[in-house]
Length: 156
Image (cartoon, rainbow, N blue to C red):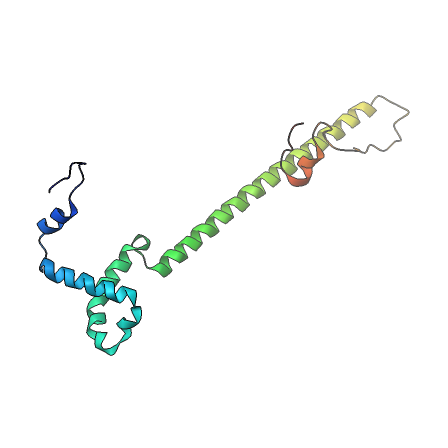
């Protein structure tokens, strides 16, 4: 193949060196016809173009098969929707995992706080009749925003 000074393959030389089952003149006429049809697609629907449509159908099928990763448009879009649903399920599962971890951590902190209250009240006779209720947040150092929306607030 011929290359230009920039090192790129000369397209005209590449086209003429490839053996085609028809002449370059016939190819040029075909391209002219297709260019004319591309400007007015209604021409394809004319009865005189029936044979053209019949001959073009296999080429159209081939070109369609090259799109959408070798699948049809419908199958590609269905697979794309399945991928989106799977990703949404994964995101939801991760959110539920974080929610469970947060609630388990909060529960553990509340139990620890209650145990601290129980330990404080064991030796005191005067507080024996007072109810042992864990009042307030389980962990005073944790901002309440963390408990409300599940995200850590910005440290101020």
